[in-house]
Length: 295
Image (cartoon, rainbow, N blue to C red; front, side, top):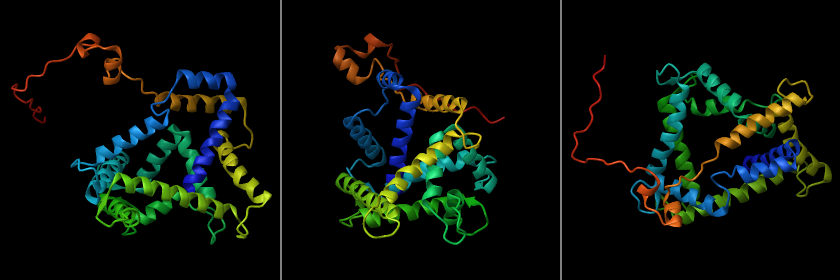
């Protein structure tokens, strides 16, 4: 459900940016700033690279342990970055500071959080739950209001086990590329069904004009809330310019120009590496460098 809604909302953001910047500017951005993934082939190549990086023993499959190890590295990096005092415990204050830092630097993160809030009504209180607090409650198994490294590690383990229970269709404890692709297809299908059910407020199996309009308007309202920095219900020219600048910086950061001495360029230009850039010489017999003694 959320995946489909986020995708739809991100499209709305993109359309809004094109409108703000003008068609000519949007075309200039597309021409001058191609991202590292700008075709289906690039997307497939990126997926293969991720798969190979997780497949530690290079057997063409991802075991549960390999998936856990990869997830621990990713989640652990976020955990230790947020753990400011380095005591192995993430307090509510540290988690909030880390969240605020991300939200301030990444407007898309603010948009996604706003979509989560608007997509999860709280029947008991009539409001919307705090997604960060809800996630912390799930991981904080001892209910002490803090996250220990052991709790985060256990959450990763549980999450991977749940994924394999659903996606490892032949029950061999491994995820092959076929199973990964099938799992993605199943997730997309489930997201579409869940999104339809969410929009179908009266549960009659059909979308009325009013339900359809609401499904489109809600993401637009979330985008407006992100752009309206001072929350006055108005979008000033300054706020629009600020949004353009911030998102333009985000786009700029995705640019990964191909190096002149990449394998593809060397083959295309019929060059050797040394013809493009100096190639360093490494002496395998040189003694290993030792770390300086602590002061």
